[in-house]
Image (cartoon, rainbow, N blue to C red):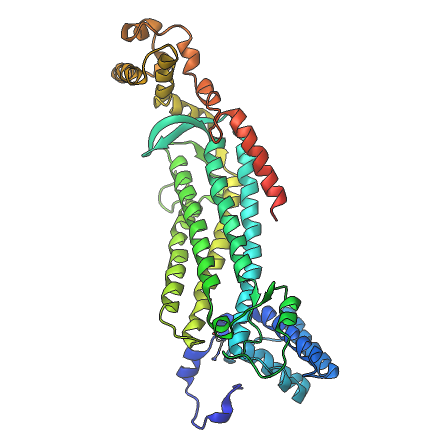
Length: 459
Ligand code: ARG
């Protein structure tokens, strides 16, 4: 049954109805819709717009609908126009005329604005929990790999030695920022649109602040036209999720490289890999590849919602209905990716020997060899040139700086002594990097304490 049949005379057109309907996707927020309606009638009764008895009947009816949908005895009618129509029509069918009072002082425009906010608020909570689990997993990897030496890269060329702990710390920082972006969105969006009506408020003496407090909002919105047509918080959420996916995608890309035959830095668990139908030797990192691939869908959602909103005059227009499917898909995708990525990381094994060998063979200690000379009075530019000659010598012989004899060192610069080997060992190279933010153990220890505090104190 339509909520608005009165003014219309012509037969319904099935295609138009299907095109217009949103039930196939907005049914997912039946809980939020009913919750909003219960708060609305509670406020109407407090204001004397409904009697207490009417309120009780409506609330009991709504609670009945909720539990029947939850336990599967009431199917959400796929032929309904939207979730708001379905709940209201079912209520009237169940409790009779009193149900017709539910929509007093309300429009579907403020109702859908409310439902969407309630839904997004719940989903931000779910995303936050998943990011927190990912952070916890990264922190475990960090603590277990403080002495897992590996090359740090720039331009994907081996640069200077770091540890896996330090490398993973970079991702910890990224996901920490993602978490704080979520809480920023929550702060800005947490105002209640209900009572804004279709666009211009209502003539009933509503207590909008009361409804807002019943639903856990900080306050009621201040402009009814903005309230029904604001979707900024969805744009912010899609942007935050796009950023999260970009981080997950970069991380996936590294894991795909590290898991390759060429690197062999890590091995993914069988549960997070797949085989090939033709090549028996293959163990492919499909999950990481899919996370990388699905990033595009979430970027797409951000562009879609921005584009949908850009030409909409005030106040509500039906274009806004397009906010849902893309946001829902982006939320589902991001949640799945966070969950799977965390599982993949938690079961991934490090090949510490291969990582270390790669750091030694890649001249990642060349800067430290130059620093050794600087510490013995050689100007840095000269030291750079000397070590450059040493590297060339090593390349010609197919050895690393660590393999050169002291005579070979001295042939290029007499400043070198026996302690050069100690000075350029990976352990020394890492341990001497003690500035805040560097991979040295003392610097990392400080940062880890901070990470733990952040995970415990931030909710
Ligand atoms: N399905 C609509 C939406 O998602 C609900 C609001 C409908 N309002 C209206 N005036 N037709 O935006």
